[in-house]
Image (tube, rainbow, N blue to C red; front, top):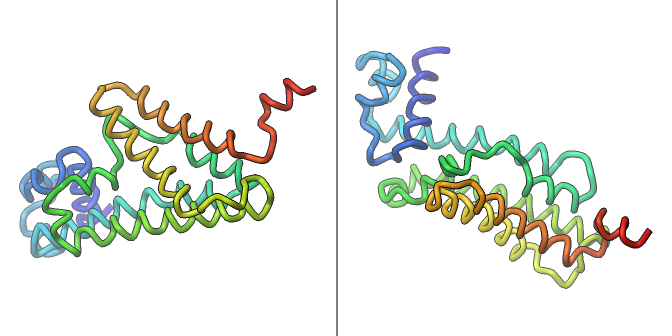
Length: 199
């Protein structure tokens, strides 16, 4: 790994742990062991490094969502798979979502743009799979795909907040389970539990 990548990785982790405002260039150098000259060769300013790190955080989280939402299974199965995926660290928060709580990120269009685009991409994908589920007869076509997509994202992001506040992952898991329960409640396809009871 080259010095540029080391700097971006270190800044990415520090953004997750401390936020942009509380992360200094010196802390980044100490984390990755790259010298000051090399740092400023690649990134003339903290903001330049910050933009690269935010873009990195956003781009590394998207593939996991894409793999599930565009993967095998029925639309409803993919939505449930997205909500129940087990690669989160709820007590550390979302690498992307936490950036929205940093005033310096929110006030800087260049820093905020990757975050905004990341959430917009996920929203578009979720709404698309929800629309597929409606077309397939798995969900009623009276639902609003955009509303339901926002609800799913809010369940996950809100779950992070509740878990951090409680210092317990249980609220995060509960929020996602609640979203799954709602999906199954409005689903026009019998759940595995319902099928067993009727058999």
